[in-house]
Every structure is written in structure tokens, then in C-alpha cells.
Length: 210
Image 1 (cartoon, rainbow, N blue to C red):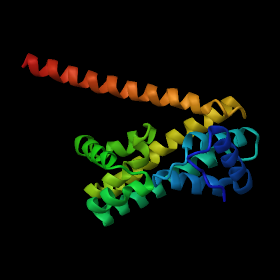
Image 2: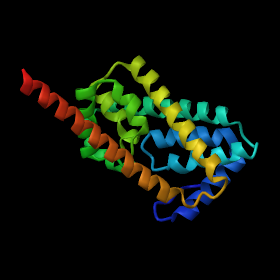
Image 3: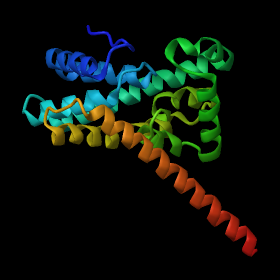
Image 4: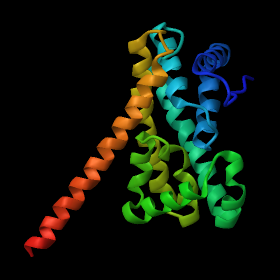
């Protein structure tokens, strides 16, 4: 199995992931995406475009990859949910750093869940950073598990289709993906900030009119 070292540059990461998917096919997508959803730093922004390229080449099936990815994300998220539920806040605060989970991430995730409820499980799958850790605070708060699973799967499926399609578009030229998704992450953050600002503005004006 190929281990992704944080010191590797994007070229090497793409090479390792490509070789892993080439050797193990759908199973590799399942494993890598489960790990990614358990907060292990494996970039779905590389895994799924690579799989999308293989789908373009006819080696894999585009729709099967997306479904497997969504299932894997859901499995990983449920694992993280139950870890949060069973291990508790103090344990995650103390040992979360070993799975790249910061105290600030847990607190922020809790804040989002308390404010927006289970819908966060859906939208977080398409947001940078948040998508990898939101399941831990969901477990801490013991949000309703069935809606959480359904919304996680649905959001993951949409995100998987999108990332795969990027792989089809670039057609093997995967090196620029790091820059593309860095810009995409920034764009998503900007959109979210603007949406929240608009919501606050509308609410303020509504209260002012009363």
C-alpha cells in the first residue's frame, strides 16, 4: 500500500494515488475515501479526479466510482460519528491531534451543528476543511443518525460526481489540480461568507422594519 507523506509534493502524491488506483481499482477508491472521511489527510481532490480520468479511459465506470465514493465517505463519517460519541470531548481534545483534529475544529463543528442542525452534514461535504471533521462533533452532540447518514451520502455523491468530472475534463493532466482546487476552496469560502453576510443583512433589515 502506498503511504501519503505530508512532505511529498503534489506530483508525488498524484503519482502514488494514481498507482494505487491503477493496481486496486474500485477497492482503492473505497479505502482512500473512507480514510479521508476519518480525517486522515488523503486529498479527495486528487483521488476522485484520478478515478474520473480512469473512467474517461474506460478502465472504470464513472457512476460506479461516484457511488462507491459516496458510500465510502458515509462509512468514514459514521466511524467518526461513533468515535466522537463513544470517546467524548476530553479524549478528542487530548488525542485528536494524532488524527489531525484540532480542538478549534471540534468547537467550530459543534457551533455549526447547533446553529444549522443536520443540514450541515449535507453542505459540509462540499466545503473545504469542514467536510473532513464535521462528523466528530456530530457524534459528540449525538445528532439524529439516520438523517445524518442520508444527508452525508447525498452531499458526498454530489461532490464525488463533481470531482470525477474534473478528472474527465483535465484528461490526465492532473498536476494543476492542486492550484485549481486551492482556488476553488477559496471561492467556496468566499461564497459561504457572502451568503452568511446576506442572511444577516436581510435578518437585520427585517428586525429593523418591525
